[in-house]
Length: 229
Ligand SMILES: O=C(O)c1cc(=O)[nH]c(=O)n1[C@@H]1O[C@H](COP(=O)(O)O)[C@@H](O)[C@H]1O
Image (tube, rainbow, N blue to C red; front, side):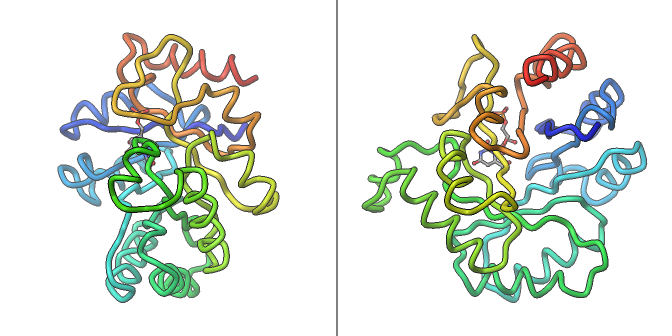
């Protein structure tokens, strides 16, 4: 079975991250290593998790000048990760440079662009001076990402249906902001349940605290699988 679930290992250190991975199984999920954990554990931790059989989404959301981002995604590819992301807000030339950087690889990571963070609301965007809603901005950035040669985008599952229609069946939709019924939204603003996210057209569900914060993370993961079966 190929699971659509990516468990976000947002831990302050490597020991609890590895301990959690030991309680999960590569058949049931992939793992996401983000900014906090990577800054602590570095490439060695990624290699250790890969050695345990997990495919890794390296979520460092690169956002810099094209040359710098190209070098960063190359470093991610050399590490052998399964997926890596950049911010679509870095623009066309930055995304094209990232795409170009992965051309020489026989088995490159999936290259994904973050559109509008799921922690952002329409009000947050207005405060930044953007004259469009989150849904409109996601649509614009997803079109630009696809046109720049990216494999897909990170968005909220609220926008997945619209993107599936407009960007076609092969464009990869990665959706964080997933909450089981009754879970606390926390800092997230655009949240959706696992079943609804898949029904909307998501390919991959990024789930952090609903699994990592559970008393029994494996049981929580199995509950998500049961919900989407
Ligand atoms: O790129 C991401 O993974 C990401 C993008 C986004 O727009 N929103 C978002 O929450 N994420 C990540 O997804 C995870 C969500 O965690 P939970 O809110 O605990 O489920 C975190 O690791 C975030 O860094």
